[in-house]
Amino acid sequence: MFQEVLGAYGLNVEKFKIEPFGSGLINHTWKVYNNEVAYILQEVNTEVFRQPQNIAQNIETIKKYLDQTAPKYLFVAPIPASNGDDFVLLNEHFYRVFPFVENSCSIDFVHHPEQAYHAAKQFGKFTRMLCAFNVKKLKPTIEDFHNLPLRIEQFKAALEQASDERIGEAKFAISEIIRHYDIEEQYGHMVDSGALSLRVVHHDTKISNVLLQVESGVGLCVIDLDTVMPGYFISDVGDMMRTYLSEANEEERDFNKIAIREDVFAAIHKGYMEEMDQVLSFTEKQFFIYAGKFMIYMQAVRFIADFLNGDIYYKTTYPEHNLIRGLNQIDLLNKYIAKQLKFEEIIKKINDDKVGDAKTILN
Image (cartoon, rainbow, N blue to C red; front, side, top):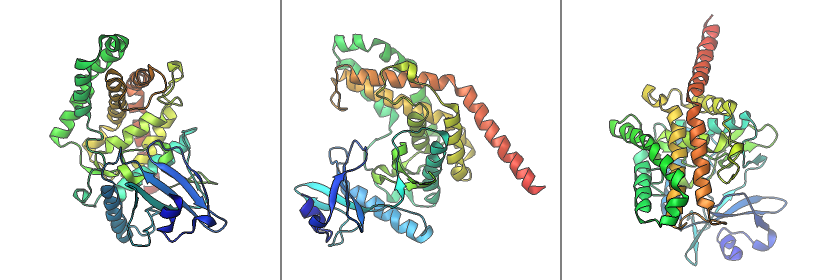
């Protein structure tokens, strides 16, 4: 496979070392390198991305726009193959090659607030630079990816057909999802009222999807652009809340380790709003805290629905795996909601400090 794919890019496989790269769970990724040059080779998971041509088209369309409007921005797009195509199709598998960005790195977990700040700033910058872009030019790469009403309908359907045994095991989780139906109701009101503007958003804002400078830790750009498509800012902000705030991730079985780091919340708000403050409407800004509830709740719903369905979507390694994941996210959600007043205080302080700084400059 390597010989045929790399050959399509004019690369001699015998002149390179090839090794698995990164921690992504969807696509297969390798680093291809020698003493002179390095590339990233990736096989697109067509079970998840059923129309990879849409990915290629979206990235190419955005690249052309940014080349014109922000030519200095580091936009890591695939390298065209020798025939000019963005993908190489081999035995019904889609492959692509990216340049490897020297002196860059990615991390899997947020260890301190500065990392959250730089990541949030990069995701905000990406959407800001595309605020004048015609979002209708982009095609969905995963249909209904963050469609919360659909996820609730899927949960209800799973609940109707689930075995008594699974319903019994998930009794508490089910009751908590039902108790928080208001999160989905609020989302429906927001969308129906037009309170949220459709924008170009990343949709997968985990910390590993940001390149950082090796020495300074400063953010360089966002990567893994397969889920870039039309959406609402709450998807990007909410996914950062879900994956940055607690040191314990969704696989943690000891829920005592799930804790909300207020300094990380402040860092997310500061970094993102430094880029998006002039882009988001006043109404959208009121939903910044809601964004965390939206994404955490949706992931809990998806895990519990899959458990009720007999674990047909997410890979599991033990019988209660999806149930534990769902309960983990429910615990995170409840701890997040308990911090809402504190979050409001944090945002107010950041905004007050911003006004104070502006007055100092004027004086």
